[in-house]
Length: 225
Image 1 (cartoon, helix red, strand yellow):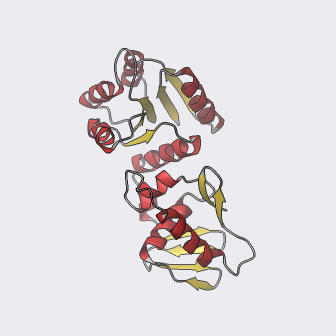
Image 2: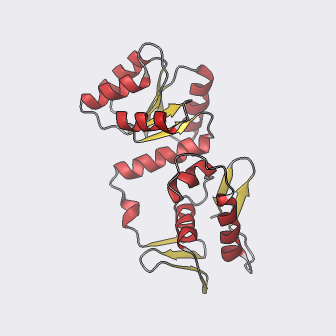
């Protein structure tokens, strides 16, 4: 992908651009809003990573200007303002997604991948079967199996496993799970994720030689490929 990063903090910009380039993406950078708007308006990008608070022209004004000019490039908004009101404001300005600072690079990468899947037409939503190793999930029949063993899942467990399988091999954070599986755009300060992960791990790993559901300390969870 060709990505435009608009971020005025040099340390953050270096951290993001280095990670994206290591994943094989081409990255252009802008350190203020006016330069960012010029590049976004004149160059073809697959996605834009946009800081909300920028010198010269703030991120929301830049975003509204882009959308007003007819640009449909997917935008991931970065913000230090984590309350619901500011998030909603960013989405209504035209952002497809947002990420609250500080964040893990793995989460930023996963969100960009999600934006691009949606941009390509949401082909993943047309799948009827997910397979990771010997674990299979039938989306229409709502059935799960590991090898020849049928696994009984509650609706929320099924949704959690589906999300983990769609991101197999990747670290998914608690924030990602809260938003994708529970539709929470805030942290409810409960152990709901821990409880469901524990139940799911017991169901898909108990009695099998190779554990699949891993906890990545300080980062989140990963379904091993």
